Each structure stands twice: as C-alpha cells, then as structure tokens.
Length: 447
Ligand code: GLN
Image 1 (cartoon, rainbow, N blue to C red):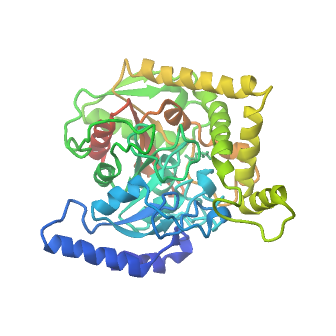
Image 2 (cartoon, rainbow, N blue to C red):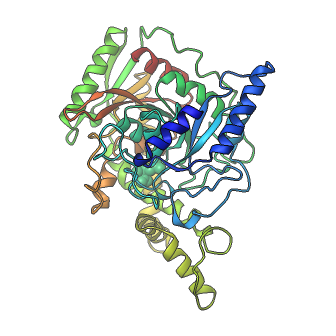
C-alpha cells in the first residue's frame, strides 16, 4: 500500500484521485498484515483497491464528482465497500469521476478532468475515468467502478485495462449513489481478466437492502479461467461494424477475432437490428430516472446549501443551481420533460418499448452464439475538450455500450491493441445473463 500511495502522489497530475487518507490506508494495511500473521488471510487480504467516489464509505467524503456533495461524509458503507473491507482489501483512496456518473470523458467532474495515462492530451473515458486511469498508471492494482451506459467498459477501453459490467442485480446498489437505478451496476477494473474475476468474487452477492439484488448463488468467477475455448461460438453483430467505426479500431477487433479462431472458436454473423435506437432510448430513460433520483439533493437533507436565500423555494433553487454542473442540469431538465404530462407517452413510454425490443434482439442473437464480440466504442480516446461543446457528439460515442445496460446483460472490455497514435483499443465481450465466468475465461485466454 505504501508503494501505491507514493505512486499516487507522484502522479497527482493525472487527477485520478479525489481523496486519499494515508493514515487510514496504513491502518487498514496493518490490520491486513495482522490477519495474515494470525492465519486469517483470504485470497485478497492486504491487496490495495481504489474506490470510485460514488460508493458510500463510512468516514470518507462521497462526492460523486459533484460540488453538491463535496462535503458529504458518508455515515455508512455501501454493500460493495462492506464486502471489500471484509475481504481484507485496503482502500487507497477515492477515484475521480464524471459528476453523478453522467459523461463519457470525465470532463464533467467538479474536481477537474482526469488525464489519460497513455497520452495526457487525451481523455480517459468516463464516467469511471479515475478508476481506469489509476489501474492503467499502476496507481492501484484493482479498482471499483459503475456502469450505467458504458462507464466501466469505455474508460477501460480508452485506458487499456480490463473491466466488467456484470449482469444487472449481481452487485448490490445499496450505498452506491443512484444515477439511473434500472441501469446502474457496479463492477471491477483490473490489469487482467483474472484480477477482475477475483474482485468480482468480492463485490458480487445478494443483499436484501437493494430491491433489485438477485438471489443468485455465490459463484467463483475465476473457476474457469483456463478452460479451453474450442467450440465457442462468437457472434459478430453487423451493426457494430458499420459506418462510423474507426479503421484502426476495426482492424484491432478483426485481429482479436482471428486470434480467437486460432484458439478454436467459430464465428457467426448476427444482427442486433435496433442498435441505433439504443441512444435515443437510453438518453430518455437515464435522464428520467436521474431527474427523480437527484431530487433528494435539495439543500435540506444532503449536500450543498446556498448561503443566501429568501424563503424555502429560493433555498432549493439556489442550492441546486450552485451545486449541480451543466451536464447534470441538462439531464434533470430532459428527464423532467420526458416524464411530464403530455410527453410521457410520446417519449418515456416509447423509450421503454424500445428497451424491450433491444433486450429481445439480444436473446434472438444468443440462440445462435455463446458470446457476442465487437468494439467498445467507435473510436479511441479523443483529446480533452474536443467534444465538450456538443453533448450529442458525446452521446453518440456510447452506441455500442448502451444496449447491454438496457437489456441488463453482462459486458466487458479487454485490451486489444492501439491505434496509430498509440491510444488503447478495447474489445467488447457481451454475454447472456450470468455468463460472467465464461466471459472472463474468454478474455483470460486472449491475454
Ligand atoms: N456516457 C453515459 C452517460 O453519460 C454512460 C455513463 C455511465 O455509464 N455512468 O450517461
């Protein structure tokens, strides 16, 4: 842990961490050493981990990348944190993120952008950009993240690390600050599929405090890492290789597929015909849920309260106006609009119907294949500032990741090379519900 704390300090310019607490980290490391000496060590006892600033962790500020919560000290632990602590993992600090997990570049953080360790002119991806950058720069061996529309897979892809978004309901959302509850899912980042499997073993598990937590038997996600891939049927959705995909990315994905064929896999042409509807559907549903979830930040119960106001209404208005950044405000306005009387049927209801159709498309595809592969994003990391002026250009970058969240499926990003500028490219692996062990096995054989 001391080694990593030193690296975090030396690389402060990356801005991957919002907070560290050396005394606390060292105390946890000592407790882990004592457990080991007493013969009570588990597989991960004493291993350092970085937590996305979205998970409530008792005694730490949980800012969620927002000015609204910059002084909010969590009074309790998220289920994920409880499990990590119980496993003896040592917290290195809290990683930077897009405000309330809204974004694809980490530039929406109230604590400033994170830089991509491969190229400091580039974004690290978002919203879990701090966690991805921390693992990429070896500031932490593993890290937690959340993925509502790609926020684990896309930064993993942009930073050249591995990350998995599990089946919805595998990781409890208790104590994970809510963005879009029906889509939010926690998951691990690591250098390898093996590291992700080990951290997922710790993060996953039924929790009755999350109403959507699944009563799924505890699995060992590392159990099949070395299983042979002979006979694996890989589906390639033609819509993921269409117009808009950068040539370098297409080339790297083709090379990865060729490698899988050598490992004994066969390739099937499949179709996910409603892929293009994922963006409009997601960008109605996610803001709708966000507008409701974020109504709790009213200056009374949590977070920022304006200094001067005249009456209760003005206190609400000023506190929210000052506490939220522009992207969060845009989502709240969009969400409130699509849920309002007269627009609900035209937008929200339609988006929900599309969501069902997209989930059905995946089930049809899985009749012909075991796993789906494709790119994580249409291109590699762009330069800081490049897409800030145009929110829609930023939303379009999510085309290949959103469908997985809408359907509740597991998806992961595996490093698969670099573009001509030396920026990492991620291969996306999508599985059917509960296929995490197979996906991690598939990724492991490639690494
Ligand atoms: N880029 C997407 C958004 O802004 C996804 C973010 C996420 O997965 N948290 O909503």
